[in-house]
Image (cartoon, rainbow, N blue to C red; front, side, top):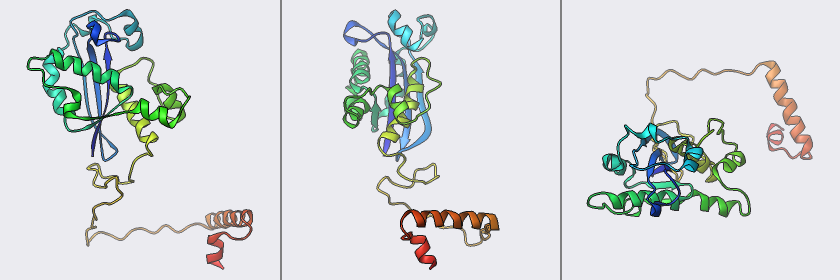
Length: 237
């Protein structure tokens, strides 16, 4: 299962007023694991950025003068997201801007929904936490996600943070597999990995007397707290 956590920064709030995308950031998840594969691009919008927008993301008109236009990166961007499930916080905003950019392209390739399915984490958060603040900063506090680097909004940084928030909101990683290929599936089934027959035996580290005593004291405390019904103590008996 391939998912793309996506965020954009823009010149303003409404594409219907001619506002454009100036930054896009994407983080790839495979089988609910962050792969390290990302897509990030600043974009020349051919218009001025609203002062209020600059206060939010810190991207200035001068910094975008030498950046490519959306038409220049559209094919690469589409290639990165096509076929994936997009994870977006307040999806109508970002999808609306991307679709606006698509409409301005020669040949008008279609809409985001023609290439991807979309999950809105803001809608998900409001369902999970009704009546509470559900912006990204509030969700970071709620799920204990470190966002200390986030002084200003940034598309790639926000996508990276949202990836952690999304995994926390939906139950964490699906497996404990350390295989970067994501062999283990979300359903809980996994491929059998057979060890080499000639591999050396595992080293056995025995507990010290102090560790055994501490373990025994802990079991005694657990047994006492549950009225002598602790399973481990009953097995010992």
